[in-house]
Image (cartoon, rainbow, N blue to C red; front, side, top):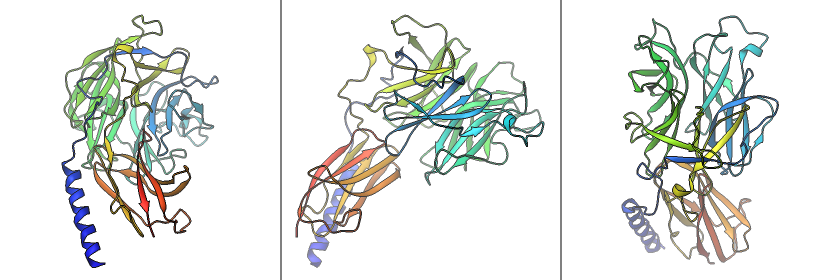
Length: 417
């Protein structure tokens, strides 16, 4: 028995070393092949019919579905959900309500209007929503935040995340608004946002701020992009970051970064309408998202107060057979096994993981892992029991890995008595 245990340990150690040397191959969307031409999809994605909406932010949920957060004009922040990112259902109520609609609002309080939300999933799987806010009609913007355990009910946090005014800083800002934030794997927070240095004459620039906790932010005393506004961020397959933003309300531009701090020179995106004609009426407030098939979708403001979408033009679209190659599932050890076995996998980016056990008839037997996992190598033990603690009989079983709700990888294993 002791020899079998030692053999198990040695094999596991060898497999872990192998995983550490493993390099995932295959096609990925990265800085070299990022699409620069996009075409509008037919119809609108989100339409409330009763309110004008704009400035979406798209989040992927644990089960692979999507939730969109967006500004509801003069009301606050609303949301919608979707299984495929194409067909959306508006959720009831508001995620945040502008203080102008609060009977206890006092003149001068920041939060008269709350909107243009952008969210970050925290390591404990709660949510933080950043928003731009003002203190009345035609007053300058600041950045505030709210937190939620479920992504539905949010509570406004005290204080300001980014303040403005001649006596703030350094550096002093004249306004701070719509942006995106990310929590890097090393624990550093990074935010890009629409803003302006106090002494600058540009109408809007893209500013950069960093934080150790997501609450206290230090603004960098320089602009990432002059004359840019309303940036969106997405991590690509090679772990680099892409930022798309509006430039002088004339075009959408894109730049890339390895660390979120230093960015490449911008390139211009070309937008085509449904008929393939070049669009000249460009709106900002876009959100970039991964589609379920591994391709990209760009969502943004549409005419009439709706949310519309774009996908890479046909010549640049990802192949239909494209499978994101940022995770790999390995054979369990030992196999065959009794009573338990260890399942190993590796992932080259942080994401939400599910490991599930199925019978050969497709019946779900056990959920054995779930939640946010960081880049690296991981393992989980299955003790041969189902979700109710009942020991399973001998036979063939299937274990399945799902990362970020994308396509899954599965393998077979044999339980013996």
